[in-house]
Length: 266
Image: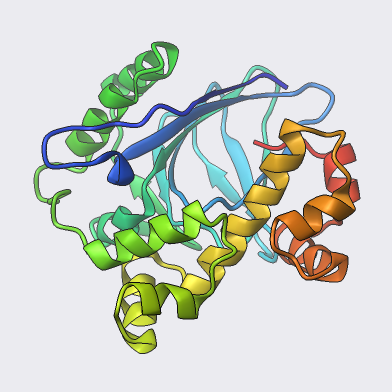
């Protein structure tokens, strides 16, 4: 599988690197030997743009798959579960990852298709510009395109700073921080934090922590596959392997060992 990832942050006047609109761009290419690949939930809202042919996405735990039509665009809320993506030969999927602080705000402007996936009005010109941004590793340009697509009716400077700070606290701790630590540090009540977090992001703080922790585990292992899974389990904040396996089965419907030997992370 050919996968290219861009991880440059976007900064403009009034925005900091912490609230980059586009955090990352990926292009996932079809794999002739393994057309079915895994999308790991990673606490980012996503814009999906099928290239070449339609793409089939099925969230773990969902009965019906969702067909993303070539020539159209889709906005996806942060996912509570992983998903499989099926690509035909000579087809690609462009994935533009957007900071979750904007997730519900964007979704309110769009028409839902199914399970937190929304129709997005992306023109041929926008698709071309997104590809140019990907080819040029330019998340600055990608962020401008997102703003243009969503029109000036959305104010990207109007965000909940408390929720933004809680997102950063969870990310910096790789999900190991507790919800109690978050609301104590930010000097807000638990009920207020959970209510506003869910309203802004679409996930609870506890779900966000779990997703962040399992991603840290996956990324740490992929950076150094020689590491012992047992040692990495404790380094990433799991009490024991049974807790890790439980989370893996919930999010990815497989065990860690099977995931790393049979699945391509995308």
